[in-house]
Image (cartoon, rainbow, N blue to C red):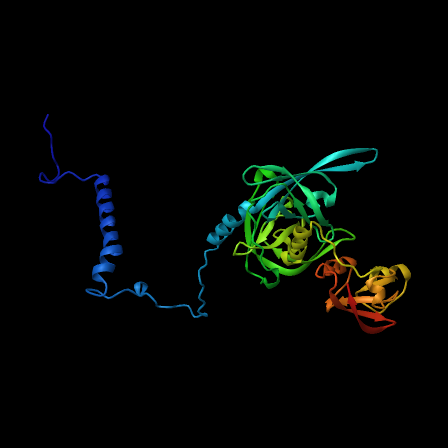
Length: 378
C-alpha cells in the first residue's frame, strides 16, 4: 500500500516544545549578562544614555538627611567579656531554713566578682543568705571550688564581701558609676539559671539611673542602675560592665512582672567598703547616735501631722554620742545630710557609708516647725 503525503513534500518536521524552551533559557541568560554587566560597564554613558536608576547620588528623599555612624557593638561586647570573664565566679550556698519543728537545708546559686587578687570577692548579701549561709563554695573559671568566708555584709545595701584562701587571682577593674549616661553600652556576666549556664554574657544599654526598687514591705533599694541586659536570679552578685570592661554595678534584682528590667548597685557606693575591709579585715561604719523612725510611720502611729513630707524623726538621743554632742534633740526631724535628702532609715544608713570617723557634715533638721542646720562630727 502506498504512502500518501497530502502536505508540502519539502516541509521540515515540526520542532518539539523542548527545543523552544532551551532557546528561551539561553536568550534569557544572554540578556541578563548584557543588562547587568556589559551595559553598565561598557555601554551606559558611552553609546547609550545612563538610566536614572544608575545615577548614584540622586536623592529622592525629601526628609531630613540623618547620618548614622556605624559602631561594632558586637565586637565591644566580645572584648568586654574577654577582659572580665576570668574575674567572675559562681557561688553556691547552703542555708538552713527553720520550718515549725524541724530544719531543712536549702541550696542557692549566685555570682560574684574578684576585687582583690588575694581572694576578696564582692557579691550580694542575699546570695550568702544575709550572713546565714552555713556553707559557701566559690567556683572559679579554672574549675577550682573553694570554701568562702563572709567578712562583711549589709542587707540594706544587698552587698557582701567573701574571702577565699587563694592568691594570684585575676582582678576586675572598677569603673566610675557617677558619670554614667542613659543609652550607653552595658554588659552583664553571671550564672543566670544555675551553674550549668555559668558565665553567661548578656548585653544592652543603661536604661535609667537613680531607680528605687521595693523589695518587700520594709526594704527598698535606692539609686540603682537600670539596664535592659537580661538579668535572672542567678546573675545576682555578678558584675555590670561598661564598654571599657570596667565594673559599674553589681547586679541585684529583677522585677518579675516585667521584661527587660534589670537593676545594679552602683560600684562607687561600695568602693570605700572594699578598701577598708581589705586593709583592716572589717568595716565599721559611722553613726550619729539616735533611735528614729520615718516621718510617715511616726504620723501614722501617733495620729499627728508634722507638716513634713519626708525625713526621720529622732525619738531618742543616745548619751555621749555624736548626736548629743551636736545638740540634736528628741523629736527633731532630720531631712538631709550635706544636702542629700533622707526619706528612710535605709537611705540614712546608706548615706553614712560615705563618711569615716572624724569626718564632719551639715545636718538639716526641722525643730518646732523651723528649719535649722547643725554641724556634726562623726
